[in-house]
Image (cartoon, rainbow, N blue to C red; front, side):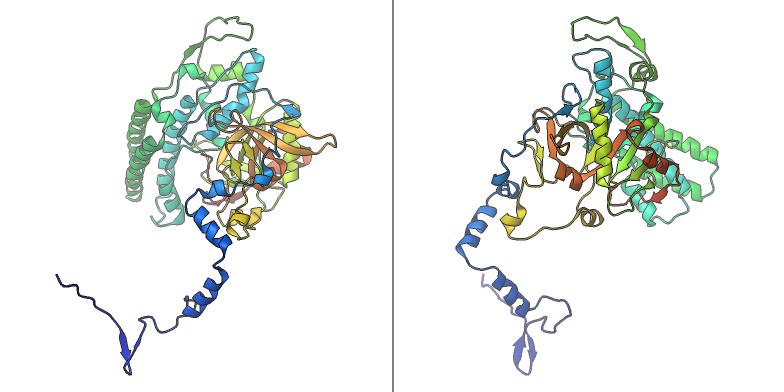
Length: 466
């Protein structure tokens, strides 16, 4: 078959011109391209870089050789911890982090070799409560247009496996805790993606129906009956995926000396009251967000998991104040809930978080120079992961050069399951810290008495930890 080539030209006075001959403001022109190409010289160095970069992983190429071995994993002060946990393929780091801050208390009080709470138990109730919260929000905001930014956000985020300290604390206060033996992990709790998709699908479907019922002036009784039916379906999905949560269980343990305790029956709330027994309301969320005013109290709308629960509230502080309180807590052997932008400058092989781990500036010959505030407002950086802050290294001159984090990615990731972060990395990528109020000065605590500034749930720094 004969090939036919058709050439399209624009004829004007017998001269052919490009289709886009007329210049448009802001468009890339041939003159611009000539100038841009001239900046990328045909040098041996650039040829070598092209060969390397087009055939290899960027992160490996950017590893900073000069930084190898500069950070060790020795600490002057460290909270005693138990075995490393593993959240697998789930966004439950916030649950692991919250539970890992309480775990040392159990190990110490009962002189145990090791101990682990059930993450699946509290995860079940977190998902169930979030479903209820979403449906209540659908009813309360039914008068808003479906393309209103708040409604768009709600439908995008009907339920998820992420969270933060407030969702953890409210969950525990209402439902208590159980040991891992009382409700072990399942495949779905360790691999939450598909279950989460099904929950979202069901909630979005019924969210529309609840809005329609509310706008048609259906009675509250009818709305409550409809919601109860939906919650029953959500419960079924969760029970089939995670198992039903125990209403009571029997617990027995072995201490460090090999002595086996008597078997005792608890309800989850009784277990928390007797085995832990601390007041979670004594803990305060601190943040370092330079895009907002310091020394003020903020609240994030819809950032909770209970309809009757608390929105996430935090005091925004300069980083040095946050570190001051963190240091005091560790020196008193108390771990803290800590969250950060973990993916930035993380070397999982060495288990370090260090600003000098990777040098993309040198690799690309381009300067990446945004400050923390700029990274936040442009969505370049935000809190992505929660871990337990368990160590600090204090130098002879009383300064600090590094901090220790207990992670929940298994002992194979990082340095035996831990991550060491430099003090400079703490400054740049730390976002949230939960500290017992006994370590916070009175002036800062007084901020809690002020009226909180309400922030929208889509603020760039408030994505839940995963």
